[in-house]
Length: 77
Image (tube, rainbow, N blue to C red):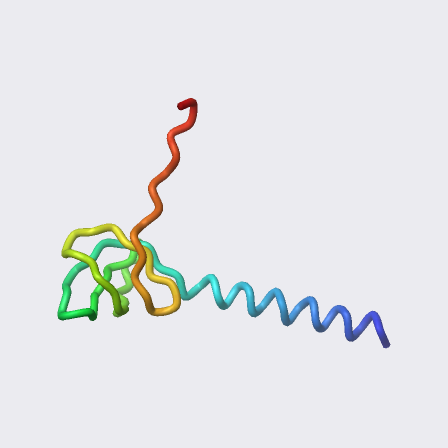
């Protein structure tokens, strides 16, 4: 009985983590209207979020808010 409960809890926690990461989007800003930003994601979807960005900026959307896209670290420096 205890093993069944533990396995259900582990499965549910995995599903929650997978669902949370699916709300994130990386892409370019298509339009800005005040604080509302329309972003075209890398996979082709369009999402709306709130934040400060300019048209053409690469951004990340997470939890409905805009953040600057992370720059990749330069290795060897």
